[in-house]
Amino acid sequence: MNKDEKGSNIPLNTGNNLRRKISVVIPTRKVRNDFITMKILEKLKANLKDNLEVIIRRDKGVSRARNAGVMEAKGDIICFLEDDISFNEQELLSLLKSYREGTVVTADFSIPDRPMIGRVTIISKKDFVLVGGFDEDIRFGGEGADFILRSMQNGIKWKPVKINLKHLSRPYSLKIEMIRAFYETAVLLKWKFKYMPTTSKLIKFWIKSHKFPSLASFILFLSRFASFYYHALIRNFSRQLRK
Image (cartoon, rainbow, N blue to C red; front, side):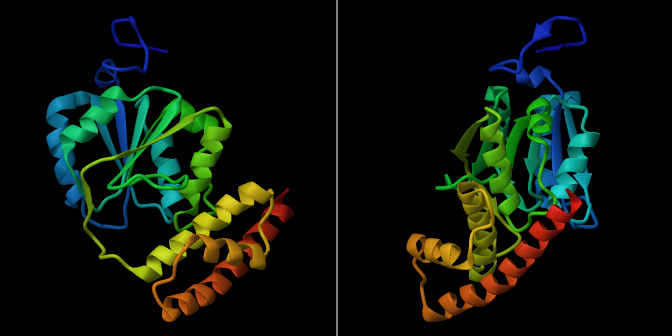
């Protein structure tokens, strides 16, 4: 529970959030600030006025950028946005208004079948600190799965929702989606088995849960997986050395 400027107690609860300071954190590699997400946020400012803070981070690595953005944030509610999405500002306003502390809301154009963050993710700063932020050693979407799993481990409810949203920068790429899925799958299995799963377990899990559209995509999976798994082992070995 927090106190507003007049000293009254206002919980992070339905109907009161728009009177709170909201920090929007946008990681980006773009040099200029005229990307599509910023243009839509200009419309949102008309509703939130001084209660909306926009933080743009250009740190190396999306997890590092998100963590640094929260450290800089002055708001009670953190809203992570990607820099290349088009969405209805009224839908985002509704999500912010109805947000409840103790939950992490992930919004995208579809509801995922596995733990992951969305292109829009909302969480209170208090809960973010409790979870410990994003793991900066995990990449390609795996950091999102890890963050959601650690959130739930700390008693924070995961609430995925579907909104009218478009991803504008890149067309669908099988290569990118498969690499992203490798990391997500490895993180999920690491939580299940409490250690980095063996190569055979990860391959069996992947083949069982996914249908490959062609032989070429399956070969691409094997080649990318070999590279991914090597780097995953190196990261885990480095962590053991730091303990």
